[in-house]
Every structure is written in C-alpha cells, then in structure tokens.
Image (cartoon, rainbow, N blue to C red; front, side, top):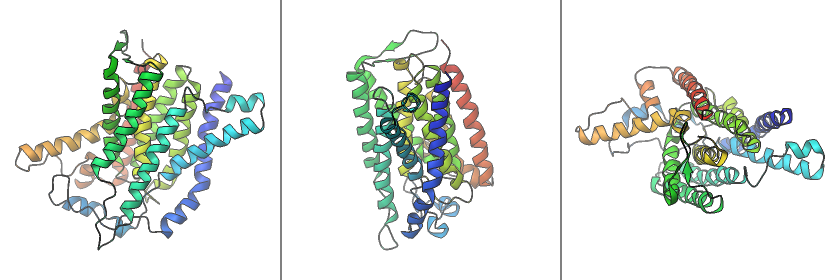
Length: 357
C-alpha cells in the first residue's frame, strides 16, 4: 500500500517538476515564433457577427501564445519514459515498483494523450500561421471531430475485441451488456467530452477543471487497485499543475487544442478503464466528474437552438457559459475560481458514487 501511494505521488510530483523545467524553453519558442492567433473571432458558429466575443478576446492585441498544452503532455511523456528508463538501467526493487508504464493499464491512455495532443498541435500551428491577408482557422471542426472519432473508434475497437469489454457498470445493478453497441457508445462519449474542450477560454479555467477531473479518476483507479492507471492520472495532474502555474492570470500562454484534444480523449479512455474493466462505474460518473464540461457544451447547444428556433433570440449574452458570466460583468478571476470550486465539488461527488456498489 505504501509503495503504491509513493508511486502515484512520485508520478505527479515528477511531472510537475519536469513541467516547470521545460516551460522556459517552451515559452521562448512560442514567443519567438509569435504563436498567437493573428485574426480574432469575427463570426459565431451560426454565421452572425461575434461582437461580444471580439470585445472579450483579442489574441492579436494580447499577444498571448497558444500551444501551452505542450507543457502538459510534454512533461507527462518525459516523466513516464524517464521513470521507465531508470527502472531498466538501474533495475532494483524500488525502481521496478515505481515504473508504471504497463501494457494493460497505461499504454492506451498514453497513446490517446500523445495522438490527440499532436493532432491538436498541428491544428494550433495552422491557426497561428494566419495573418491579416489570410484567414486563420486551423483545422475545420469537421476535421477535428473526424480525428477524435477515428482515434476513439480505434480505442473502442481495442476495448471490444482485444479486451472483451462490452458492458457498462451501474451502482447497485449488474453490468449492462450492450454488445457491439459498445463501440459507437464509446465514440459518442469521446466526441461529447471533446466538445467540452471549449472550456479553454479564460486564463486558468481549463487547467483547474481538468486537474480536478483527472485527480478524481486517479482516486477511483487507486481504489480499484489499478495502481499504474492511478499513477498515470496523477502524472497528468502534475503536468496540468505545472501548466496552470503559468496560466493563471495573466496567462503566459493558453492550453489550446494541443492540450484539450489529448486530455478530453484520454479522460474518456480513463473513464472506460475504470468501468466494468476495473470492476467499477467510471462511465456513469463521467458526466458528474466532468460536470463543468457538460454545462459548457449544453450552454452552446441551448444558445444555437434558441437562435435557430426563436428568430435569433439568445438565452445567454454569449456562449459558452463562462463567457456569458464575463459579458454580464463578472471579473475573469471570479469566473475561473468559481468553476474551480464547482469542479472540485463534482469531482468529489463523482468519486464517491463510483465507489458505491
């Protein structure tokens, strides 16, 4: 038990330290190559002028780079590989126990974290290369959704065919076998969680929210004795906290797609790994643990439906909902910290429910 706790906290602490160490280099290159959007958002998703969004956010004026998510996945990757190498080069009982790179628990989430993050980085690079003469926009929404869909489809196929997972766990009930429908359900869940990535819109907001969610799943995995998976989740938390250190107002950089795409897909994977595969209920509690993402997506959907069916009338000043609070006069730090509080509370509730039954 003690060594398991040490493994989890070592992973988190090491990732935080590595993240802090690599940030100066990351920052240098992001500012050197002016990695911020050259064109501010001018048109909303419904085709109307995004006047409020233009007032709230202007990346060209702020000159705050994107791609800060490199700190998260970079520190996570360096740390997990470094610990693995140490265990191989210096094979002792302690180094072997601290190593958590394992085929059955961490290969898949590490793959999704890196695959999603690298595609997200490509999107960011395309985004920041825009200028006043050429519209910047990165990969289209369809291409990003297709990418997330393909990655999650592969993972869903792996779960279903290689691991034999075809059921969803529910508290106080037997696991419900959904057969082949497990695959489309997994893909739909991944896409829904990815949509919540638009929460990355205010300094410090997304970092605190994602840290709380992964911390909750680290606890769930630890309770299920999936220690390597728990260490991996803690690893991600450490990387996020290093990012958050530099993302709190005024942000040195933004997380952007290279952070949110990898994190959201991986969050889905971790939820399914702590479900029937781990003898728990990780999927059922996902909407609770990820409640800030849920309300973010719902606010966008509600806004779009309202505009479409109510002759352009809006429910919110602007969507997603965190920008609505900005628009009505809340200071950004107040929005951020209240979202942090909500994240922690719902992470605790989801964690508690996941341990039932």
